[in-house]
Length: 388
Image 1 (cartoon, helix red, strand yellow):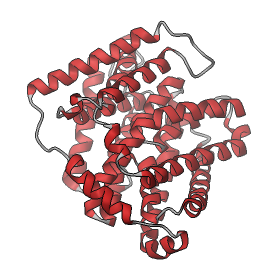
Image 2 (cartoon, helix red, strand yellow; image 1 turned 90 degrees about the vertical axis):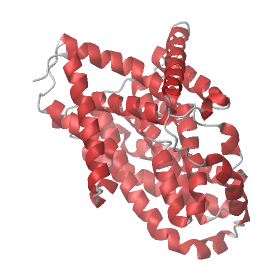
Image 3 (cartoon, one colour; image 1 turned 30 degrees about the vertical axis):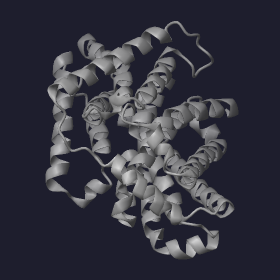
Image 4 (cartoon, helix red, strand yellow; image 1 turned 60 degrees about the vertical axis):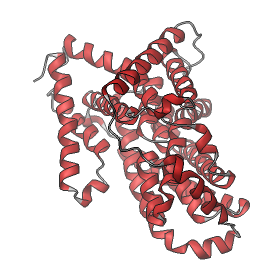
């Protein structure tokens, strides 16, 4: 049993490194379903459930420091790479498709909650609220929302389980329907000329910079990250608590996100390495959250899996109706869907399957989910609470 805080943190960092090393070296197809995020969470949760991590004051101190401080740090590094001006240049049709996907996902959460709210208990609204963060932008939004709503480790286990299974089902459906692009676009009477125009404009701006960050770049980014997150924490203590959602931690997340988005439109966004540093904080935070979970009490798992499938059904039916109404093409609809649910990791891959030249568009669509995901998840959480 691990009883010392530093040993506990060191073990989790080693676990993260081993998972990524195995995924990178083995390249098994199973890793398309069991993503590093899921493996890290499940691995730490299983070990925690088996009693590897002792409930000592030293371990608890490290868990608290990481949970409170790594979250705003992660958000800074994830969001300062997002230049909203580039995202807006994708064109109204692409942005509309993304927003339609976001709207139908939120509608799916509301419908599923109304059906199952009596079986979910008093904290069901917060669990689904946290889960919605992953459905609109990715893991970082879910972790941020979960911490803001103070949901339990068991609740986060439900959210991750629901999201992982639903993501696999949705991605399979979207991949299978790509071959119906031409008849779909004829049915919706969509004009696809804007895709070529958007791609030509974005390719020169959104190519990944493979240059490794220098020491001074890393230090500048760390200074910005710690400066913004600490300032946000100080400001949040001066703001009032409103209901069950707007508490000091929520204010910290909102302030940090807003400042970071604004910084993303400055030369700071061009500094290399923010995404790498952000991922380090995100996966450590995820491993710590997993280590506090217990799989021995997940009695409601079938209900949450069913909720995920209902959300997918409402999302796809709603997106189909809106596509016909707004004359949206199939590629934009499906990219908007996967950019919401899969985030910046999956959207470029999906775009590349359709056309490799559209990978930059996929990157920006995924970044858009990162930008708005936490805001939408917190708003949806308040709506679910009102419906409870």
